Length: 138
Image (cartoon, rainbow, N blue to C red; front, side, top):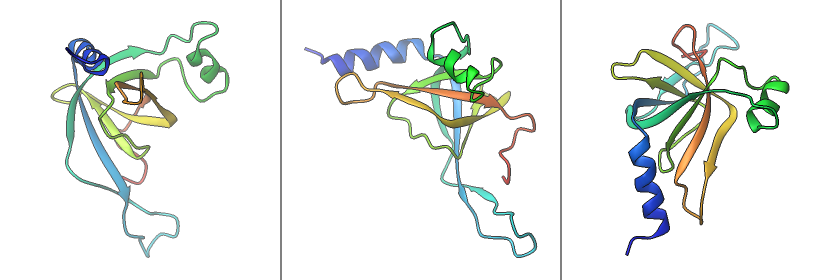
């Protein structure tokens, strides 16, 4: 007999169909030529997973509406659902598609993990399109 966690994970896998690439970054060495410029360098390898991408709807009374009113979220941002066991940090870049057609950054405090009974089944990430395709200082 399957556990609730396994059933939920299988259900999530069935609906996560967009290819999503995650690149993690860390602070690189300080540059002596520029006082404030501390570059980001890629840490590890690209992680490919599947995700579900939705627009921010900001319906009245929703968490998204509150974040829009606070100025933390914009109506053209995206919500990306990924498997709960995927590592997420604020210094990561999320590419959508294979090949990647659009790069996104994670909005600060924009990852919400949903544990049903202790184990995280999926994560909900609020993401913003990177106009240049790069994080600042990348």
